[in-house]
Length: 151
Image (cartoon, rainbow, N blue to C red; front, side, top):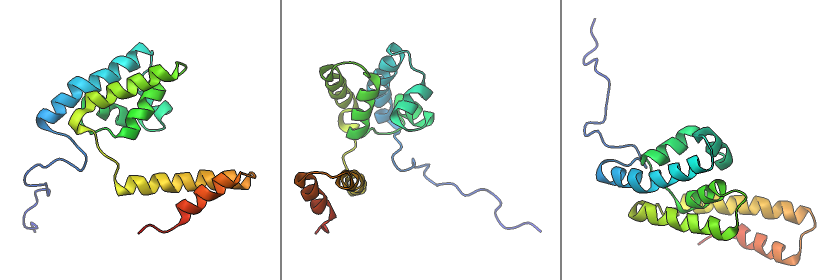
């Protein structure tokens, strides 16, 4: 017996997934940010999988960034600049980070509460490890601040 409508369920308006970029914004990201990342990656002799390893992510994340399919974050710009300019001076790393921010333009994603909580949690873990290793009073103070509940 047929079961009603057998067609698969799809989003009626073909809306993009969360964080996915479409249309003119996608083209602008690909032409600016994506092209810059690709150019720097190739100049360093890196494959997408090599860059992904340096970023501690997977190859598809690098592919999506180069294709302009996702909006980059400030932290991703920082990670990219450090990975793409490994072994170079801090000034060159910072120059690339600024160029990546400019290339992303208005598409650059800001820090969300979720990102902030994750960063605070990672900071707390690092500071707790430092405290266990006999850290100084400054580290103890920072750890106490991170442990306080937010209002």
